[in-house]
Amino acid sequence: MGYYVVNNSRVIQLRDGRIVIPAARHALRGEAFSSRGRVVCYLSDDVGKTWRPSATVLEAPPEMQTGFQEPGIVQLPDGELFMLLRNSSGVFYQSRSGDGGDTWSAAAPTTLKTPVSPASFKLIPGTDALLLVWNDHEAASPEIQGKRTPFTLALSRDNGNTWEHKLNLEDAPHGWFCYTAIAFTDRHVLLAYCAGDTRTMGGLALTRVARVPLPWLLQRLQ
Image (cartoon, rainbow, N blue to C red):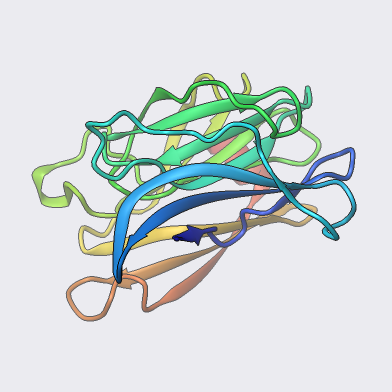
């Protein structure tokens, strides 16, 4: 028995039409939920009529308490798929697929510091730049250790290998910024995300939508 977690704004359709759903499977031990996840992708080549699991199931190192959770993927300009994985190690792990999500490279740590919180990321239309949204803990003070703050944006121009010019849109120490959905218009990026205050409400109790001008954002992240 198991329980599957698929985050908001995670299902993607590749340029060849394939639909890919990245999911984390958590075992059920009787009535108990296990936080330790294993990641698999579900693939459809007939517009969702039939599905099959990926050949690869990504397993975290045994010492990683959470396993891999809440995976996200994006298709890069060259067709490769890039995945980031939430976990309890203090950095995101990444994996890549060259065959449309069927097989994946062994997951490896990135340099992106993070609490136990997911990443959201998309290719900016008309560019080769990836926009990443997460809680950057590169220089996190003791006050915010383990919290989902600040609310940070960064760009990668080399297919997710490196990230540059970070920008915090929010940095309230009691904020809880996560589960971002990203959408683009002609000149703006829309970010819809949880933005609760942990002192007065649950961290997931409030949703905020930010409308950010793309020219301004790209200038700030150059």
